[in-house]
Length: 230
DNA sequence: GCGACAG
DNA sequence: ATCTTGTCGC
Image (cartoon, rainbow, N blue to C red):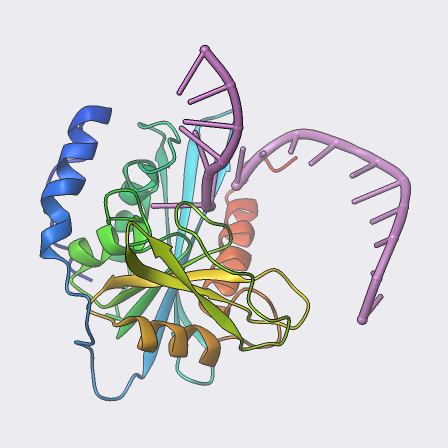
């Protein structure tokens, strides 16, 4: 699929932060997606410390059956370190490359990271949403910023994630007695819809299918490519 | 200066 | 994320 290039990835830490502040105003934080969702994509990254490579996978699943109908992958050398708050500058390039190899354009994309629950309001999901020009939602496994009350232990329960006086996401329990996930708007999706999509795409596991399947695929493809595991 | 800190 | 063994709980 075609991906828009908003800017170059060849920037330093200072420029990266400046870029985020310039892009945040472009985000659409309310629902602006197809009336009927037919497909949802998930992504994941695998990293090889010894060879300094990033292995990215983008998978498209049928909604709501959650059947994987397409896979795409890309391998790129690392050109930016991991710095909390600047994750998209490290994982963005390989993710974009993987999406460019997809034939189908998914209705919505779920990213393994934060949306607007970010120091400058532009986490990985939001940033990718602008490049892909597709509705995106952020579903992270742990917190980056924000305060919240522990949600009830029942599956489906949630609590608000507050940051600088705003509700920037939801702490959602996708499975009973298991750590919650952090859901936030990426781009063109409201928080209520983002939460709804995460819950409706979960299948008994803490991690919703788009991300979970992408994780499985990226590890399988990496092994097939003969890239060192452990 | 100290602690926090997506993947 | 990676590295890395055993272990606790449903």
